[in-house]
Image (cartoon, rainbow, N blue to C red; front, side, top):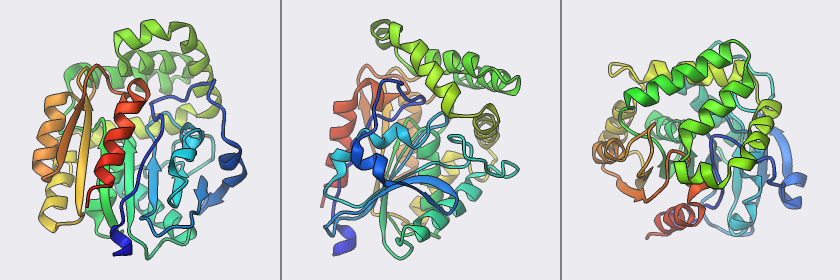
Length: 303
């Protein structure tokens, strides 16, 4: 029964971290290293299922720390994967299988090796959450994957290839502007245009072209339909094994990377719920934080 208690997720996850977001004092004091990964581990005096938040490609652990107050009722873990942030990791193997092993090691270091967990991931983090659930090596109760789909549009693939070209030439600023343009709706960019340069500066300061580039290169490789870690194959394995209690795919209606219809297709393959967020592009949690937060909290709270 304890393992099935519900939980909440709250945060402003996006491809990039806003430079203006300040870290809460609680999270700042909790930053640590777990199995070689920069992390925030926050215990809670409750029997709620622990929640693990996994960020997107151009994020780092601070991308979630402003939202820890929303999880004060449950154990919470935020961590940087290999390729995120500035911590040096071996980048020779950036498969989702490797990232799943890393997650297992981080959970063990947190003392959660034998505890069921909820996973909430955004974009790359959402695919990793699915891979972890499909692996059979972790006890996963529920999964929420945001901005993940069964296939990417040609526009999305070209955007990623453009980003990768910038990263391979060491141009973090160029990458920052490209990924911003591809990840947010026109209305959001118009409203926040003056802030974008600070966001790009923060990304260039807190991440590396080698790390982010390695994540994107592997992302493009896994999108080949025959790849064993393609999202549809992961969804099929999860459904066949009955690996989790349930899952939710959240999609932005204006997402050019992972379209609404493709998100719905992936949810059908997994036997999961699908929820569109109106007016959001790829970075759903940043554009529509209240709607996203309510959706995730509601799903994890279901009996």
